[in-house]
Length: 233
Image (cartoon, rainbow, N blue to C red; front, side, top):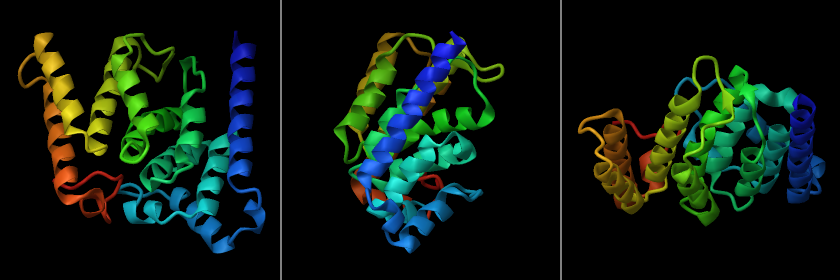
């Protein structure tokens, strides 16, 4: 089983690398300052998270470089940042790189950097969902999935991990500006007798408020110069 998972991981990494080359066949000949900007963005430890405005400014060459980083197991420590930047970029090619990563099979216990990358994915999809319907479909599918994750991180596993992923996906709907979908999920949880003021209820209320603010003010106004693409309260 471990051999099969390793083969699947190698195939997935190869697909992402081929995607990066397809996105920018002349990557090495591309503007060096654009590639350097992409690398600088993701290869830093941002105390408040990646700057939204820098992610939005990524070029075609920068996006291709991030896809390449995401394909490289040796760059694992930067995968979470690359995922976040790809999502916030709103770039037309970002979903392909994120989709290949999301389709990787993980089993047993994952390491810290892999956990961080998996945890970043719903938020990245939420940002990208404002311009990419497939990203929105990913969030909705994750929320409808009752299966338990095949992987775990330390003590976090099973239904607790599934609930955390779905909580992140609800926030992703808020980041997408889809208050209508958040309200639909809130109505569903009420029918399922979710306790008032429960963590899930609070998550839904916060996501709905965020979505309404994005719809009212626009994402650039809400997220500009704010870390992790999350607005200050």
